[in-house]
Image (cartoon, rainbow, N blue to C red; front, side):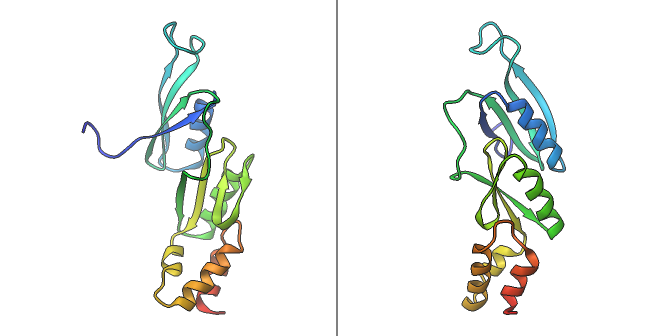
Length: 159
């Protein structure tokens, strides 16, 4: 294999370059790379963007302007592991702007891509071998849209 890792291809309807710049502005360790434009041999208007390579949080992506045939849905989402509430708030605010908030830390951005904004310790809490701790934390999480770390920790502790 020529490179390590995978590149995720995201299908857009004409907004690939705009989306790449948007994601690069939100996440650290991000950049927009090579842009491929339609030529006379292409299926789109000459000079319009066909694909744009970008990195967000070090993850490689390519945005493809494939047209309206396919759209995003919740069956694919990206998890953002956050170390503190400030990070949760940051990503939640930026990704929900022009999109839609959902349950349990899920948010749909303005392009229809789904994200899970997750506190780093949440998985440990909901998978705790003590079923009461795990259950209280799960119940608290299920009642939230944006996840509140302090409230999840209180539920976990039984407070």
